[in-house]
Image (cartoon, rainbow, N blue to C red; front, side, top):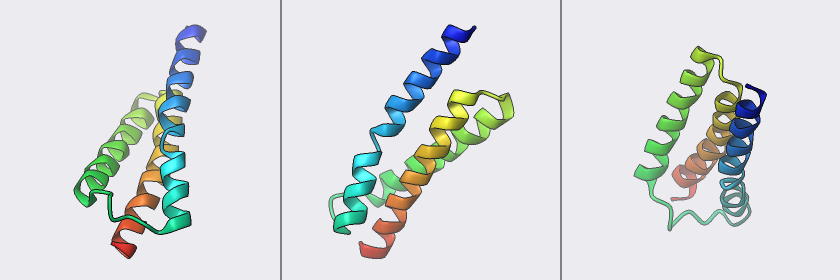
Length: 84
């Protein structure tokens, strides 16, 4: 069981960290022209639902990954809405 949790956390870290460069670049440059508003919105909604699911089933890797990813994606979405 511990091996499965570790696998989940490794997957969570890898899929979450991939959004960090985009969020940092967007914050630094405020350039959001190449980002799709629809894609960011749908992705944020999906990640939010995964977070709720993780909370409901009590799965720590899902909660961790989607909490961090949700913050990053919403931050990017907010920048997209503000700077277009």
